[in-house]
Image 1 (cartoon, helix red, strand yellow):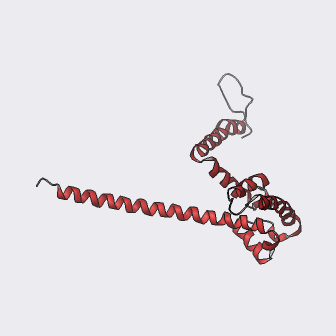
Image 2 (cartoon, one colour):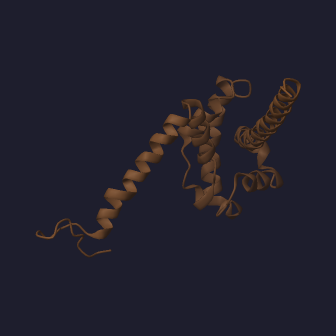
Image 3 (cartoon, rainbow, N blue to C red):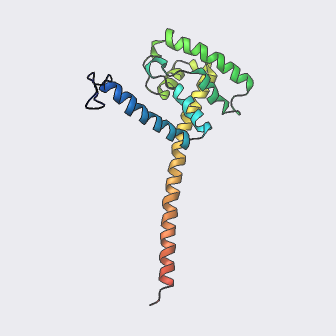
Length: 177
């Protein structure tokens, strides 16, 4: 990968294969995927997905972004009014420091559900109640999304079956024989 990438047969290139693939292939593919995601999802959906990703504690909180988590909480106005949003802001700071430095149970978590389980077992859901509530709402969002997808898939199957049976009846009743 460190060898020169031949751009033409006459001139020697100063570009390596690694640079060529990174610049000409990988970045182009990533840009195309980002464009597709931006076209497919609305701003609200993107904010929800990004906020849920920031609550994922893989690699010792590598994805933690408090602004995106706060944006996620703003989409639940019945659960988080202005006072609770302010409290959540402070709780996120203190929880992040506690989980990173004082409690080894939070290191190397793989999923949000593992984090919620540890918080409930250690009674930390009472100390950081707003953080815990936001994590529960995130878990519920995963389940609700899957349930809605399943319901629409079922409705699509039923609708196709009904269309097929109605069209069969139509052709049987209007036959020219």
